[in-house]
Amino acid sequence: MKKGNDLIVTVGGKAVAASKSCTVETNCETKEAGMSGTGSWKRYITGRKSWQVSVSYLVGDSATIKSLLGKVGTTVSLSWKMRDDEADTMSGDAILTSCKISGTRGNLVQGSFSFKGTGELK
Image (cartoon, rainbow, N blue to C red; front, side, top):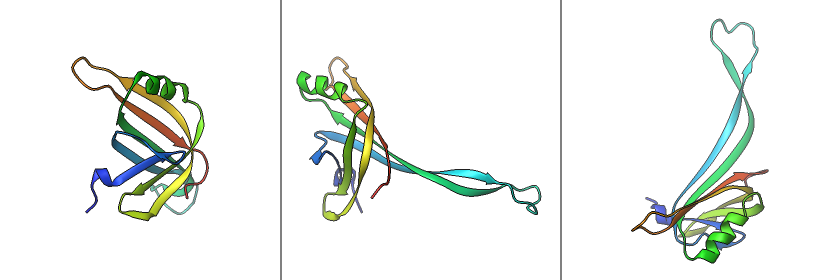
């Protein structure tokens, strides 16, 4: 059984430090197929695929905050792997679509990244 700590997301070859959680999602479009003879039931065919990754993390220092906020809109090399299995890796290029940083009095500063895959997921 895998645990959340076993999934490591890397950006440009560097692990996202202090990562608390991550989500990897793939999707596929569906298109209605205009086929006769199906009666009152709709039929669908598959379309194009897409993927995205979200990472929540603990923010270190103010220099890190400035650096992260400035990278939105850039394309990066993104990959993720299982900690105990180097061969179990997926990767692709992705656009950093958002960087959110939240500070609550009495708590650690937290942040999140959202990436949208551009091209094939390998």
